[in-house]
Length: 87
Image (cartoon, rainbow, N blue to C red):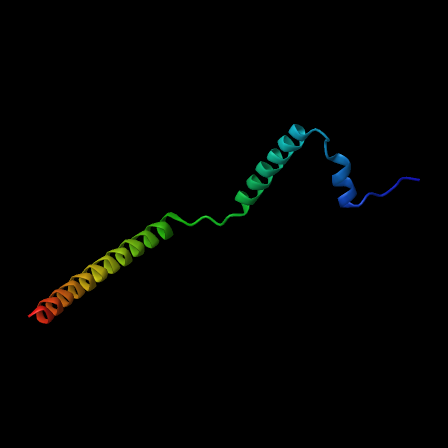
């Protein structure tokens, strides 16, 4: 009568004992899994990439100027307070 192996037993049975062979097998499995996962990826269209790039540039520009303005205003306020308190 044939023995039925569970997945864990099957995996243990196929494991090579040599550490180099195990590392090579693990690397091959990693690349197989990566290739399989990349087939499942939902890639954006060219139009979606363009639109999100434009939004990103606008948001970065806005916050850059906002932080610059805040820094400018606070530095003038601090300079005014230092001059006022040093008199």
